[in-house]
Image (cartoon, rainbow, N blue to C red; front, side):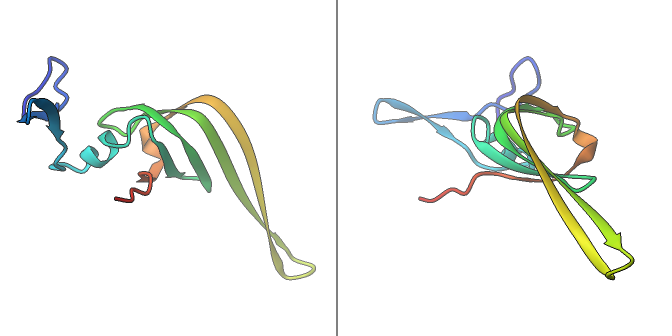
Length: 114
């Protein structure tokens, strides 16, 4: 595949009946994330944090910029008197969020139906 000056992979243009189409084959794991740009993604993070938001940018370290993000933090406490685990979820909306790649456990692209 061609590379631009920044070293990022570019799609291979294919001529097809006078229109330009692109070949979006996945050759590397990060290609799946590349195909999710401008789509809503789910990101599971360390520390019982989950994020959902529109993926604006990412890099090879999985640093990401999410827009219109929703963060859910789950906390677990143990009540010794009742011998029960108490699970609490707190959610907040964030207009623009930078996610540091070393906290990312999983990135799930949007569900694609064709």
